[in-house]
Image (cartoon, rainbow, N blue to C red):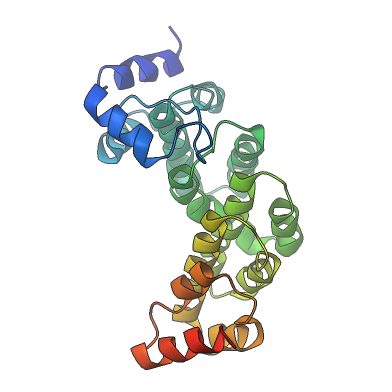
Length: 241
């Protein structure tokens, strides 16, 4: 039995039908929902993370095998193991291999296919881009992909750059997503703008001054959450002019 099969059996032993039913509604797996067709075992995130830590030494080939599971939580564990290994890696060649494996999963379709999977992985794997001189080009290529989840990964990858003191990629992608039709991108972009503002409020205000009239309402609301109430009101009023 492969290591991926052992992890799968471990996860299946933690299944909870009642929780699975609730999760399918929460993650909109109904026809037409953003998570349409996904399957859940009914396992909480803390339990999934515990399994990931237990099997953190899983080989890359077995992680890939695990990531193709039809069950959401098992794919979560595959991504969690990838993150653990990436954060522990000291060799840049190893980090590169793990990052590229992650991007192949992102583009593979059906693997990183919901907001929780993106948000639990991209902020950490994005650290690889900190020392990449062509990081903006890499991110823009992902942002222009037609897949919603690849686009969300693009903006959330910039979280690592924000933490490293570089807001520029976030602001560039935020401009790219001003006319995006989906609320999940509005939320993610607003969230990253808010984080950028925590590091450099002047840059956030500069972005708002230039683009507030074009920003989707949700994106704007998320981006200004940390500002004083009176200032939030002004930006919301300005957006209507």
